[in-house]
Length: 323
Image 1 (tube, helix red, strand yellow):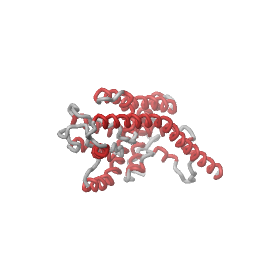
Image 2 (tube, helix red, strand yellow):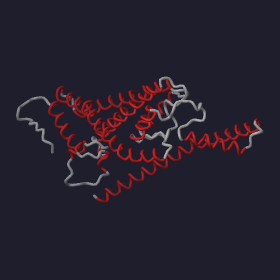
Image 3 (cartoon, rainbow, N blue to C red):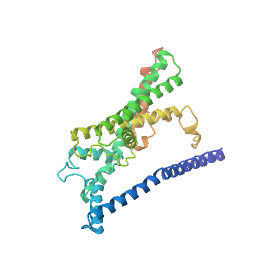
Image 4 (cartoon, rainbow, N blue to C red):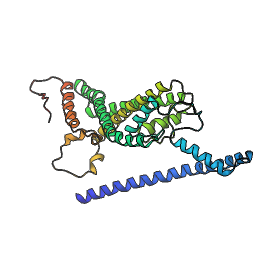
């Protein structure tokens, strides 16, 4: 058994390594030609600019570009008027706070001062675990409301097979969440943002809600944005609600995998392992409060109690005592 387990784990690592290598090769093949073309175009533009402005030396141009690019990295665009909106008003700071604590991190803007960087370190050290805890608790309550209760209701009151109900419900839920937090917001962003196509906006939604956060697309940053404060507040709400929905989506996918041997075939066996613990959210480790696991068991009992049909008084005894 241990030999078989070792082979399975080795195979898992090998498949993952091949997947990483495949991604590296494909990204290289797709992006290298575009990078080379961009370099050539930039050299042509630079040469044409120097020829048209012979009073400007190449060294002076390099110095100006370094200053402009440095300002761009700190969130100050050289294309804007210096009297443009601040990057650190309340709504912009709130958006920065949310993207930092959710680990999305667009990198635009970033703290400029040493005191701001020090505060960011302390604030994030406390805020990131707290945010993960908040999102996990929210996702667990959404799981009970939108997944466990409907499945229990259809299973007990209508007699449908539990496995079939779970697959159908999960498919509907995944399709609904995908449309609600990817396709519809992508259309809205493509309308509101300048120079964003639909695919660009869809790419932004996925990168944001997966917390990758490259920062190549940042909403609400172009000059002349109408109702910029309200727009950024809407983005804050979208990110928080969307991340909770993504945790719900991940938990739904995890529940579907329970019907296969894939999640457990590569795990070390524990003779005293309780199978009932398999419903614990995969991101529970991100929450430092152990009470959540106990509350999850309590809510699981509560759902089963209120969803099951009242047959006999002795068939089920509800006890609010936590394990």
